[in-house]
Image (cartoon, rainbow over all chains, first blue to last red):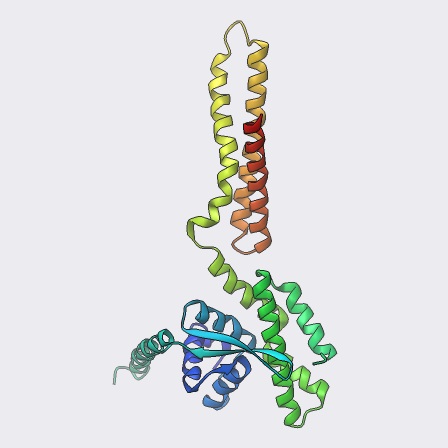
Length: 107
Length: 174
């Protein structure tokens, strides 16, 4: 899947990746790659602006922690984020169903 | 943790291209550096030599210009909300509109027998006020329009606004 096709869906994918628990940015990217069996071509630099947008929208919360003398930021899903993910999953299912129906010629 | 040359050069590139408030810049660079460290460690654990690991980590993160652009785009869309972005226009208009109105009114003083010296002085000052206020208004307007893409232009708009405000305060004191 090309990076351009991900545009607009990255937020939803990050929320889904955070369902398993809090994580740092790198771990989230690795989780997306793992779940997609490497088919997702992610420009990892786009992860952080997407996470910041989600945080501004109240869907994720972040906190900094110090480990091995390094400050790291960890993200976790909020209640709003869980609710938003449920809505996005429903919208995606509808969209996927519509596209499948069109591609299969209405069969 | 000591930074390698590749990471330092990459972070320097990203920093030079970032056009975001200083807090966001600090956070972005910190997260990018941590990401590069984690990615490099992962590649080294997979058997790559350190320089190769850094190169792979940078390639996966993406070109510095693209990374900076995604942060800048995100800030631009949140910064540029509605009517607030036009606020810097207010002080220049406060200079221009009254001066232009007085100038137009003052032109009615011109009679067949000409202007008194006092009227001439007044008209000159209204003309100057109109020109300065008009110039500052145009400058602020152009900066605000360009500010959609460039943060520095948004700062310039406030500079025009500040000059106009200073002018207004000076004339009030006099």
